[in-house]
Image (cartoon, rainbow over all chains, first blue to last red; front, side):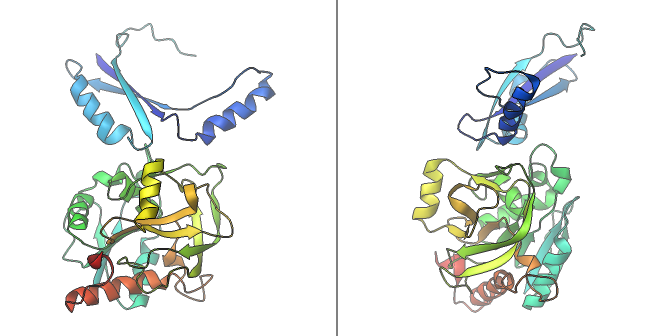
Length: 88
Length: 234
């Protein structure tokens, strides 16, 4: 299987109130020494044939991310197809 | 004057927007997201709601609806377009307006009557207001926090493109209290609060919302009569 993974994150200068809410909840878990939490989105795209990074980039740029507020990164998932995927 | 109101899957305020158009004295024409034909309307309202369930980001999927391809082209050619709430989000996703609408800073959905101060009155949708006028219309959003880079914000202010600002309290953390903006030509306006919910004494906190719709009719009458008002003079 040809899987491309797109990670979308809010740009560093954009406030992430969701991440802040998570960070603020951490002391309740007894966790300290965390300075920041930011939340993004991971999107997995399955290609029928070979993974096409150019097409994936176009999809990410036009639809998956809003370049005004978000950055994205793209990579081929080498693990795709393995049954070794760990589930929690 | 025929003003189109688009219905997307998940639109909520299309009925109220069409009603506001009628109360203002226009003819409301219902447009369908899947139909690229806008049936010769003179202006378009993109209503509030949760188009496509807000999947991915608010407005991100709606921006690619067949009707939007036509509206985006027509807006670039001067068609007056008003995006309310989700409609504002769609206009930003379509890059007809700069910036983006993000999660309210306090993470709460805000639903209340909201005071605004009108800035730009030379747009197709605000030419019946006076600059500095304070109006009261409902606001209701979870992702209404307007953000843009400093350069864009400075440009919007320098060019007089901030159409309205929140006053007596900012409901969502929008930068520089921005509630509504316009494009450089003045024909495209995006507003987060809801003018279409303030057009009748029975249901609204005021009749202040009506001005947006009468402005469009006035703008169109000016265009038809050869006397350009609003956006076309910018």
